[in-house]
View 1 (cartoon, rainbow, N blue to C red):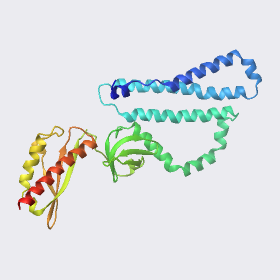
View 2 (view 1 turned 90 degrees about the horizontal axis):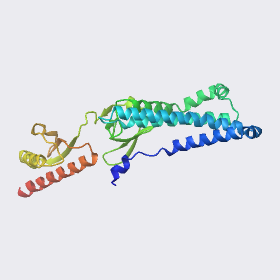
View 3 (view 1 turned 180 degrees about the vertical axis):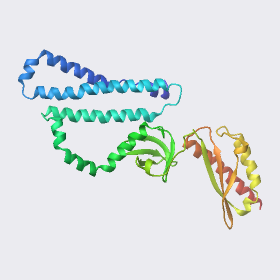
View 4 (view 1 turned 60 degrees about the vertical axis):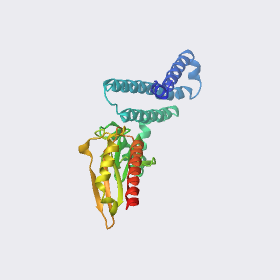
Length: 293
């Protein structure tokens, strides 16, 4: 069995199964020994707290499974946005946390309504203190359920550029062209210049280089050499009309160029490999011209 088939194999929901079994056991024991349980101080209260968490959590898990199943079924014939499922999972985690807090209140004999009413002023103070995190969390949820971007997209936010590998409540996690991990606050998507470089499944990348003036006099020869190698390269999608070697800067004794190309995939690693191959050819050409002169 290969790695890809192992990754695609459905995972057994052990947590869900555990919750169901625990609930069944608790209810069975409660019904069988109800009188004895009621005679023990605080035990009925503790069981009430457990039921308050387990039953809504099980129903929420079933709803989550159903929503994800319907989403995957509806989008079975096209590319599925991984961040939608991620958003459902994150939202489920928040609701489970809320259920757990309410369950603890019931377990310790605290009325949730009275507690929330008495803690209103404190809650407002907490909201002000953690305002940035709360807005980041809301922005993260909006990003997860929006059509603007998805896990795997290449984006540029402000000065940051890379491929999205995860979306959390606080940050969008990017892997940049140097394979470094960059944490971009979710709010930055809505407050800074944002570009989705994968919006149209673009595999465009650029090769920038600089040549001495004496080598630039032979630029037509270099263009023909690059065209020949690019045309026959298996990892490049080449159209002759798209091949344009652009001058980006003209110095006293140098010329800087830019070459836009299309790879067969959106892989950053593939783009860097292709860029290195092309730059090596340019260096060989430069050495040949300098040696002959």
